[in-house]
Amino acid sequence: MQRVYLDHNATAPLRPEARAAMIAAMDAVGNPSSVHAEGRAAKAIVEKARAQVASAFGADGADVIFTSGATEGAALACAGRGFMGAPIEHDAVLAWIDASLPVETAGDPAGRVTVTDPENTALQLANSETGVIQSLPEGLALSDMTQAFGKLPVAFNWSGAQMALISAHKLGGPKGIGALVVKRGTDIAAQLRGGGQEMGRRAGTENIPGIAGFGAAAEAAANDLSNGRWKDVQGLRNLLEEVIESAAKDTIFVGQQADRLPNTSCFATPGWKGETQVMQMDLAGFAISAGSACSSGKLRASPVLRAMGYDEEVARGAIRVSLGLETTEKDVLRFAETWLKKQQKFHARAA
Image (cartoon, rainbow, N blue to C red; front, side, top):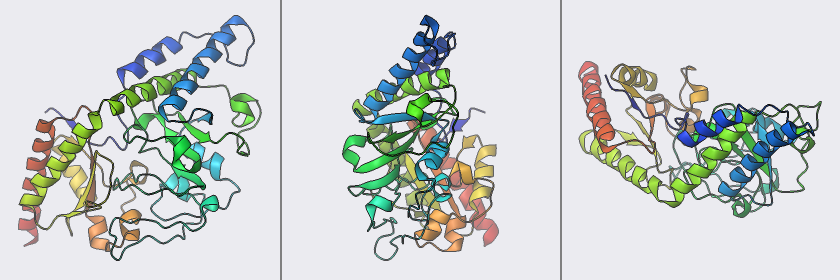
């Protein structure tokens, strides 16, 4: 059985450019904090990657603070701040904020969030489950841009945000490396102390291979974006939805009329549990998810969909299909055909 990977929002396959950069970086002997030639060579790898990430993210003149991922970045950005937010945020951000901001439901099924106090608010740019894109207000304290970076033409310097979270493995870099990007001069209280690394904001010897892979992946992702490759992915996503929608009239597509990530489709069959669909499609050779990868296995209705006004049955019946640059039309049509057959069997059993 040839498997088809349709869970790119959870993690994207490692890009060859990132792999090559990581392998080369493994030969760097020195510690980047050392002043001898070997240390300077290691430091050069880190700074090259920092420049690559900043350029790809439109963050020239900002500070790129390397972390172990967006989760650590969220802790670094949010600890002691008292930010507000909405319940559609990723768990890594929700752990640190007051999630009391309302999510629009009546007349706006896309779940847009209205921000009244930007300087004390965290708001994601794109949702990992639904792909729905938010409009960021000027002066926003923090934005989780992990899903948007590499898929949308994002420029941090023009986003209106003071701080942003990004992660390498969402755009084809290695796992375990990310960054908190901040406007220069922003006050950040270090959570990991003991050394002067990362401008004194994140102590610990740098993960040189991971950082090198992040830089190479960011540069390659920016090239793919400028070459219009994600427009082709969006066409395949739309084809997937058209095929399913034409044959399964009871399917509910979440945020379909809103601006979304080009690769993301979230849809539900009321009564057919999302985790059941994930297991059935896995056995059939397809990797999908029933929400954020960090929330998988919790066997709960999606808090994101519940916040958007969907009832418990719909929220429990939702799955996420997220395509990648290597996804083909054959992959999409095979998935749609297989999923529709299993949905028909579900209806036959439920009848």
